[in-house]
Length: 238
Image (cartoon, rainbow, N blue to C red; front, side, top):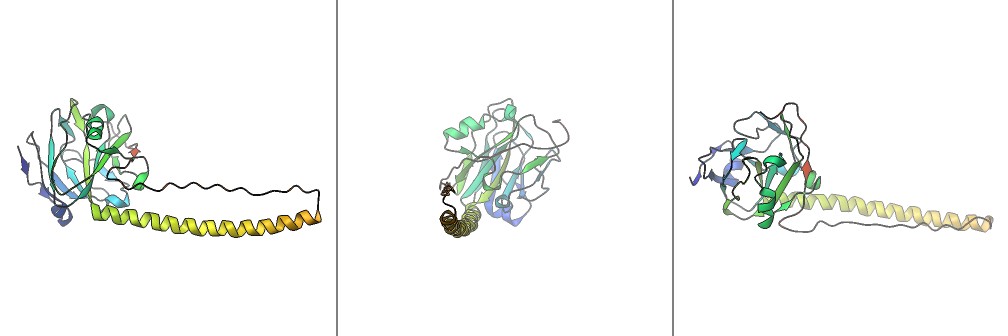
């Protein structure tokens, strides 16, 4: 049916996700994203190695396998970054294609600290993650198109995501500036030394150090490319 109350486990998720539902009568739970928290309602598999940016997010849990034609719905109480993790490309619901048409993007590997690992199960393909910034209100994911779909959702408030992004460039740029200053000082000292050496030994060849620098500034966008991660685990899918 329509949107229904999820079984909520913490204040953080209550504030962010007001309700979830599906057209298949699926039961949901939600909770705070944390090391060792459960991924799906009907399996004991857990998240590990969670990126810092996701640790103040909410996880929405449903059964591991979603039947073909499932439409997931949820209501956000504030603008949020939604990560849809797809650990099995053979059962991805065709979300990569359908969400891309809606303006979502595939998360580039290692960006924003990467993605969490799902421990307890081994998949035959690399995990892919689709993500987008969604405004406050009710949202529906596209209908799943594969016979079975294995997916998992994590939502992070936009203010939390922005705070994380602001911290990263600040620390990296400060370190980069200090490194450049250090390199310039060494370069000046090296140049003086080379001049003196050439004066004493005319046969010595001159050498001018060359430097090149390339920097990539993250583009501000509601959909950025980002990661894939290989899950590492012990047992096969059951």
